[in-house]
Structures are given as C-alpha cells and as structure tokens.
Image 1 (cartoon, one colour):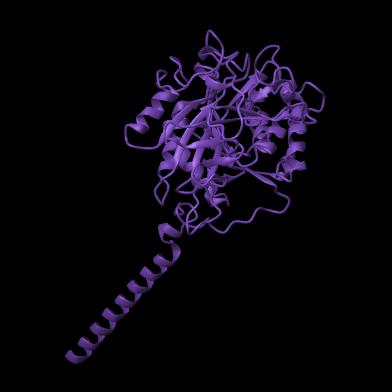
Image 2 (cartoon, rainbow, N blue to C red):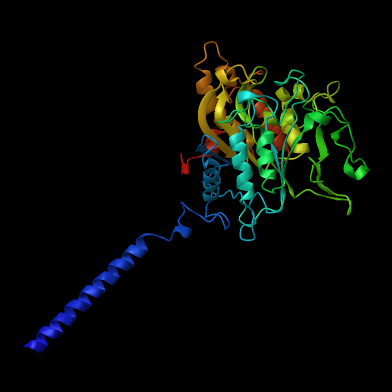
Length: 421
C-alpha cells in the first residue's frame, strides 16, 4: 500500500512538472523576443520585411512631437518599420545616412520667432545622426541662404543666431545648438550662405577655392538660372552643393558622401500661398546673382524649385516642422500669429509631403482665419496663383528627371504615430 502511494505521488509530480513546462513553452511562443518585435526593431539592422501596398508611390510619416521629446527617434523607428531606413550600415545598405556621411541640414534661417526651423527639432535630428549605430565619423552642416534680403533682420537676410527663436527656450538659437554639440567634441557646424550670396564663383575643380555661388549660364524652361553654393566649413571640408565633397589632393568630388536633409517650417506665404518642403529650396540658390536673368524667386510659381532640385541635389529626406505653423501672414511668423500643432512629418517625396501637410494641417487652421487664403492653399488647385498649380509644375520637373513624386492621395501611404492610416 505504501509503495502504491509513493508511485502515485511520483506520477502526480511528473504531471505537474510537465504541465508547468508546457505552459511556459506556450508563453514563450506567444510573445516574440523584443529584438524581433515589429514594434521595436534594431535600428542598426535590416528594416522589417515591408512591401508597399499596390498602387502606393510615396509614404508620409507623421509623429506627435513638441521637439523636446523623443519624436525624432519615434519617427525614425516608424520609417524603418515601413521600409525606409534612416541609418545605412553593413547590415542595411539601403539606409539614408552612413556613419561617414557629410550631412547638410537645410533649415529655414531667414525668419526669427516661429518663422525659422524649430531648434529643438534641429537638436533632435542632429542627435539622431550622431547616434548612428556604427558611430558617426562624418560631419553635420546646418545651412540656409536668407538671400541677404527680406527676412527678419533690419538689413534683410537670415541669421543662425536670432535673439528670438522657434523653441521652448526662445533664446535657443541655431548657433547655440551647434556650439553645444561642438563643446562635446562633435563635428557639427553652421554656414549662413547669406554671407557670400553676392559672390559668383567657379567650381573647386576650376581652381576657385572661394566661398560663393556657382551660376549656370542657361536659363531653364521654368525661368530659373540654376545656382548653388560652394564653401569650406570651419573643419576644412570643401562642399559643392551640386557636385559633392571636394578632395583637393585627389582633385575629385565625392558626390555619394553628401546627404541633404531638407527641414522646412509649414507656413502660409503671401505670394505663393504655401511654403514647405519644395519652397524651402528657395534657400539654395542666390536670388541676388540671378536677379537680372533667370531670377530664382520669380520661378517658384512656374516650377523652378523642381528644376533646382533636379539640377543641383535632391534631399534624401524631408522633415517638415509642424510644431508651430503659420496659417496666416507668412512667411513671417511672429509668436502671436503662430498656432501650436506639435507634429512633425517626413518623406523622401517632398511633393507628397507638401500635399498632405498642407491639406490636413495647414488648410484647416487657415480656414479659421476670416478672409484667409485657405482656398488658394489647396494642393489640388489647378488655377494659376494657387499652391496646387505651382506644386504640380514642380512635380512635373521631378518626373521629367525620373524622380518619384505624387500629388495623388490614392498613391500616398500615411503612417501616423507608427500606424498606417
């Protein structure tokens, strides 16, 4: 009898252990390891398997952010989850930014207060680049051309050191952000192209080492004479916006190493209705040097910014600052005229990005302004003078060069806060 009780006890114990092991195995099977979860990919590895749905041409990523939070990191993670990798690594050769890239952040520095790119957002993007999973050994250049005219400065033009800035701490200028990273030993610098926007130069390979603007002789069919900056940074890096980074010893350009990230503010515009990713390229040419022939600013309404992108350098990514927007009285955006939205958006397609952000963010706020310009802002507009008219002409320029862009909402995939909408 005693032996039977012992045998029965052993059998019950074995059954309990087996059941516990099976339950544990089921629990392990129901929850994948964090490193393989599609919600938390390794930013240094390959993007999760992702195929654009049929008919989709471009993806727009939208994230809630006030600039001081982890919005940029969430944006990068959302991009990677949906097929666009920010970081280029040995495991992910399709990424946008390599550890040795020279990254040019083309901001808006022409206006103070809420008219310029949010410097909290700028800080976040710089930090994201420096956090490259392979370590960052390149250089980051923050730049813009306020054209030495217009703008918030008494004498006209832009500044990297406005007293009043677009940030939580309104004293935080672009230059202050740059200097804070330099103090930590990082190769981060700023170049205000206004300083030499009146200087016409030749390319480095022609033996001209001066800072200035190269101006094409030809006036393109959109009415623009293409021009672009070339300059040497405080770290001795020779940069041609069109040709790439110049190596004076080898006398060659490295075009692949130069990556442009376009960082506009979403605002109304008194002449062109909307200024965002495409219009932000007006800070690339010299309006002064082309004033009498193929003037850059006059070509915006005829598609000239698309021409400029094609014949200089396309941005690898566009990040639109919608933390504060200006639905009226732009492109100036005083503190009392701006509306806080707390969103950022990104796309490799500047046209799709402008279409979506204008239609869904800017226009609803502009519609609240009595007598505002919301109807003329419509990206679907076709009449001359509307935003949609010149945006389409810019898109056509990209199409002629074989560059992907769309204004068709049915061809856009919208990912908001990591979720496809």
